[in-house]
Image (cartoon, rainbow, N blue to C red; front, side, top):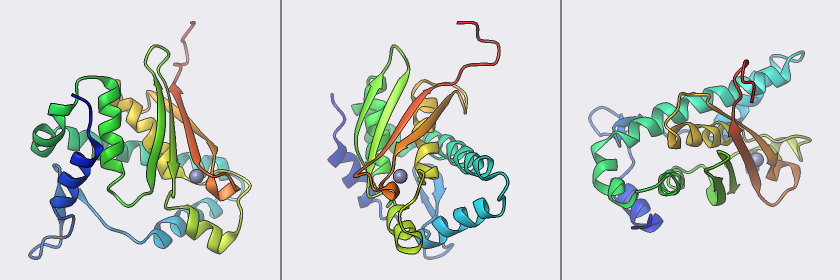
Length: 202
Ligand SMILES: [Zn+2]
């Protein structure tokens, strides 16, 4: 049985992703979620990078790292939930299905839309393409075109998807955003590969 994105999206959206009237907490799929303004999220990340003018790349890597841990915790948690078992697991019988199910869930979260991917199971590489990433409008509106990619959260999620699909530890995979709509590309494209360990002689 193939993964039916519409069924997953209708199932998740039908759960009503909003805070509980009594507690204000938004629970779903075994995890607690939060709704935030993207202007807030994007500008706080840019503030963080600006706080380290001598080490901007390090600050960017820290943001990607946080997103990768978050992807593992959030989607790893969802994959163990009764909702996943009831709604999604029956459609999933391969790594490709798992990644498509993750994309279907990610496409309901207000982050933009995964529009395509390639997964090479033999070489453990993955390319994911996203349009309307939530970084694009706030970034272009405030700062104009960027000279480098800006979708730190999506990059961490792309690598996190591979951590989850191959059932390995957090940070078994690493990625790069090679095209970004903030740079004038028509899509954001993320390429992920397995991390080599320090003493890997292959
Ligand atoms: Zn981007």
